[in-house]
Image (cartoon, rainbow, N blue to C red; front, side):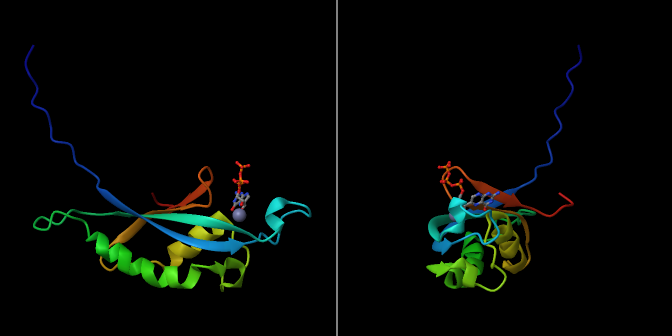
Length: 132
Ligand SMILES: Nc1nc2c(c(=O)[nH]1)N=C([C@H](O)[C@H](O)COP(=O)(O)OP(=O)(O)OP(=O)(O)O)CN2
Ligand SMILES: [Zn+2]
């Protein structure tokens, strides 16, 4: 049998960085008696993922420091707050917080592939553009 040369695969590359903040929230629209109708707190973990071409000289999509810089104003707005008091987060579910973050995080020259919000060790929500 004749050997077929292997074709080098085209790679899709993503980078991710995780951030944390502490905040309280309550869910105003849940049924009476639902545990989340009461104010309680979470150590939120947010993972931001960027997809894009790898720069031929630098060897990276973007410096992780750029993600850090984009995160800082968001952290300042959310950390140690009652999320319900933050404009746009009156009903701060994981789903709506993830969408809120997606609308506000901007990293020059890149596009965000997805954002993951984890409220607890076992509960999380991921948002990404519909065309993906
Ligand atoms: N789809 C969603 N469901 C729930 C949300 C949410 O944002 N989206 N949020 C909550 C509460 O904020 C709750 O604090 C977190 O949920 P849950 O996983 O139920 O928390 P527990 O640690 O109590 O979970 P157990 O696994 O039952 O211990 C609720 N639902
Ligand atoms: Zn909660």
